[in-house]
Length: 237
Image (cartoon, rainbow, N blue to C red; front, side, top):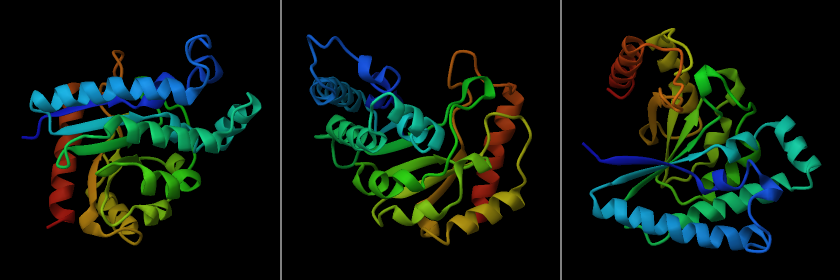
């Protein structure tokens, strides 16, 4: 078993308040803020590694939201540049994991929201994929693909040969079980754009992303996890 910890991505400390993220008397701009924030992350990750953690997952909500044309328009309307924010958040992740041991597994989950089965954003990954997949220091990306909101699999062509992707094809928003045949079919579709041996299968998000949880029982959750194991066994047999 690989000890794992999940942490909010550094963008979480900035995106939701955007221009009002910190006292301007302390931090004149976002890069200065992220410089100090990265030091905190690096220290935390180092302590986690000392404690035995071998897998750090960063939950990146902001970049996933910046895939949504409506949200990008709102961000631009507030005076911010959506593309510059994407680059800023990539740099922030890289600074936070800088110095981490070479064999530390670093996963980045692009999350579209999961509060009580609800979502925050829609839109395919195409607008951010080339920069985000190529430039983010990560072992793999965990991508939500449980509904049409996430778009098609074409953006996976930008995942470098040294990195992988976990297809979040199993929804944690509904107790309805996906069919194994559909999971096989969709994984095969994704494999047209990225090698099958660099793909994985998983839930689209956590079952208890917030204290409120999602509209699934413990039995539903176990059934979903069992489905992932069974489907993965067939796909990668």
